Structure formats: structure tokens, C-alpha cells
Image (cartoon, rainbow, N blue to C red):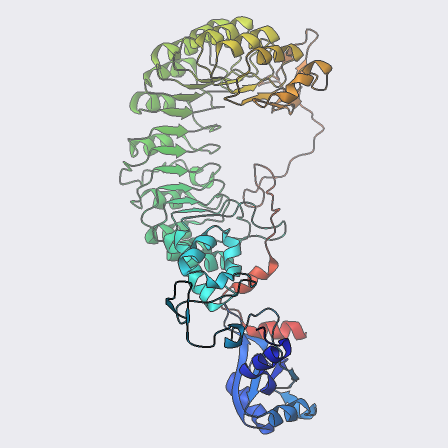
Length: 633
């Protein structure tokens, strides 16, 4: 028999002392529960008094509840004058307490059998101390789930939502602390909105929870407000960190020293665009005895300006180091050679756009290193040094783009000796002709090739590459050799081909789609870049393409240098000369000096996620009095 709703509400009010309890608001942050109980005891004997506190900060929220021993005392408090309610220079607000609509009140009247035990369908006795009985018409509450299930649910949440979960109740906070154990990686890309960012306090509050379990930490997504103190925070809370990305962070020599002293297991570290660090800091890093596997010092020029000392301070070999990235730095030949002498097991060396390097460093690399990957784009080498690349028999990935001394002889020597070469980038090597490309096409392991901006090539080169049959990636931006017939032959002859970039090739038209129509392969997706070509994507003869899911066509141009090129009367793309400045626009205003700490070189960072501003309130060591003075000012 269903109980009367009014009676049920009255029983709940009596059970939870609502008829003797008052709500007290506008309580000063200085007031504690004892003082509040003593203050309201003038209206009658107080049975219980509590001030509601923040779950994380453990500070007062400015309101509480007072329970009297009788209803007469509560009525006297409700009828008190304003002069009687002043506490700590504040006028407290008094109202009768009410049952909250957001709380489920469990009581024996909600269950048909008021006894301690009940019987199930088979006649067995159920112990209510361990089993929670819920009516069929009542929705199942998440609090009825066991801790293991809650932990699994919480681990599926993004880390920024987990902090909000901790505020719900003490049980959820306890369960959430267990869920942080599964957090092994942390990154901040796209977390903050445009005018917000990661600060040292935010980072400290997060690492207090999960730092000891982290193995990977990426700070490059939001580095603007971080200081060198962030290194101390990482060193304190992340003793077992393995992968660390500090790109664009304000890293100093002292902070690097504190970091490597506390974190002894760093395997991969990235210091791209950390412009404050100097040669001393890099020396401390490399001499720290860390088991480094990869070190990235791209765009870090301060540590290579003083080339006289040239890293002779390195007093121990780093046998574990496999990958070294020094792109866009002012490193000298002597400095690079001294680093390589202490890293005998280097397999990947990235030195793109290191304009201070000469053939001396390349000779040492070719004669003493056993590299699998070498990227040395836009570095000036003579032909004699480039011919030594044939000594790198283990080479699998080679990038010598924008090196104008590369000719057919160099390409032939590489093709004959580097039998394991898979990726080759010779874009803007304008001395290469069909003779060199025919030789390069004979490399049986070749999978990717970039011949962009090579004006001396003809269809013969592409047909030779088609005969290879193993190409997976083909890039030929702004070339005249790329025609519809040649590319169609390439597509038919290379079944593994899944990426084609023909941006700026004026000889490419809608006829190229016929080869895809005849050789439709639904098992793979081909990325096709056709920006700035003669292709008319809205023409009627390509309507059938809408039904092909295996072809991903992009009409966006990927030509990075097209703004500095022009087309002659024969329709050929002409690149500007290296020694002729007449082709450049002299009316352009002088570009201000680049500050690596203020601008992201790869474009503006996007902060489009919905980070809640209230999340700042979970930080530790907040001063309630300062907040109070600010709110009352």
C-alpha cells in the first residue's frame, strides 16, 4: 500500500531535523563552526552546527546550517532583529532549512518491509546492510555502483573533467584519486581558450594528482604562461617521466639542471624554440647521464652562437642516443663533430637549414656514422662532399632538398650504393635531369620521392619511376614533367601508391581521373592534391567521382614558394635566382625580429576548447581573505 506523500514528506522532515534547522548565509570566512554555534546559542541550545566547505580547497563557502534542540529556539532565531544577527561585522541571513531537490533521501518508509531483512524470490534472506533495495519505478543511481566500475567510468573522461568530478562528494574524490593511476600521458593541445593558458599553478595542481604515474608530458600546446619554475614542478612530481616535450617553454640553464637532477629516466626530450637556454644548459643536459634516445634542439640558437668552445665540455659518451635534431640552428662544423664523437650510435640526424655547416661536417658524417636517416636540406655542400653519401650504406631516408650542387652524378652514386633507401627528397635540386632520375628509379626499395620544382625533368623521369612499381608516395609540385598520361601510367604501375601531390602542375587536367576510374581499389584511400592545376572540379565529367570513397581529392595548393615564382611565355615555372634579388618585392616593409617565446613559428595556436573558468578555483594555497577584500572592493 502506497504511503501518503504528505506523510512521507513529514517523516523525512522529522528524520532530518528540518523542523529544528535553520540556514545561515553571508557568514564571514573567518568564522568557524564553534564560533557560529556559540553565537546562535543565545536563541536556545544548539544541537549541531556546520559550515559548508569547498571539497577541494577546504575553505568556507560562506553559508552553513544550525540545528537547535527544540523548535522554539529555531523560531526565536528566525524572528531575531538585524542587530542580533551581526557576526564579525556581517549581517547574517537566516531562513528555515528545506529539503534539497537534488538529494535523494533514503528511509525505511520508502521500502514496503520495515524489517532489517527481506526475502528474495527464492526465499533467501537478504541483508540490507550489504544490499541496497531500489523500487522498480526509481531510476538506478550512480552511487549504487561499486568503486571499480566508477574508476573505469572516470578513466574514460578527459582529464579536465576529472577535476570537476572530485568536487561532487568525498567518495567520488577518493575514487577519482584511484583513477589518476591510469593517467600515463598528458598533453594540453586545444585545451584552453584564446585568452587563457596553462600556468605553473594549473600544472602543479594536475601533477600533484597524476605526476608520479606519468610517462609522457607534452607542454608545447600551451606554453605561453609557463615559466622556468615549471621544470621544478615536473622534477618534483614526475620522477619516472620518459617523454618530455618542452617546445616554446621558457626553459633556462638552471631549470634544466634542476630537472635532470630529479628526473633520471628521460628518454626523449624536445626543446624546440627554447630560446633562453644556452650552451651551458645543453652541456648540463647531455652530461646528465640520462638514457636519452631522442634529443630535439631545433631553433635553439643561443647554445650554438659561441662556437669556440664547441661542446668540448662533453666528458661522457651517450651510447643510447639514436635521434638528434638540430634544425634551424647556428651550429658549426666543429660543434657538430664534437657532439657526434660522443654519440657513436646515432641513427637519425636532422640538420635542416643549418647554414653554418660546410662539407667538413658532411665528410665526418659519411666516414664515421652509420645513419639510417639524414635530413640536411638547404645546406651548402660541394659535389665532392656529396659524393661521400655513398658511404652511408644503411641509409633509408635522405633529404637533400634545396642543395643546388646536387647533380646527376651525386644521384647516381647514391642509387648505386644506398641499396636500402626508401625515402628520397631532392626538391629544388635544379641540376638534376632525366639521367639522374632514371638511375634513382632503379632503387628497388624506393617508396617515397619528392621531385618538386625540378624544371629539367620530362615525362621520361615519371615513366622510369612507374617502372619501379613500389612507390607509395609521389610529390611533384610545380613541375612540367607531370602530365595526364605520365601520372596515369604511374598510378596503374604502382598499386601501393596512396599519396600524390601535383599542386602547381599546369599540365594536369580532368583526364587524370580516368586512371582512377579504371583502377578503383576500395581497399585503400588515395590522397590526391590538385591545387593550382588545370583540373575543373565542378565540371560535369567528374560527377561520377562523388561515388568513389577511395579517393580523397584536395584542391588546396601546397606550393610554399609559388609566391616567389613566375611563369614564362612557354608556360614553365621559373624559380628566382639565389644571387638575384630583383625578383623579390623591395617594397615590403622590414619584418620585425622574431621572438621565439612570443610567437609560434608554425602559425597561431588554436585554443578553441571550452575550458571552464571555474576550474581555476581548485588551485591550492588560495587566500580567502584576499578574495573577500577583492569582492567587497
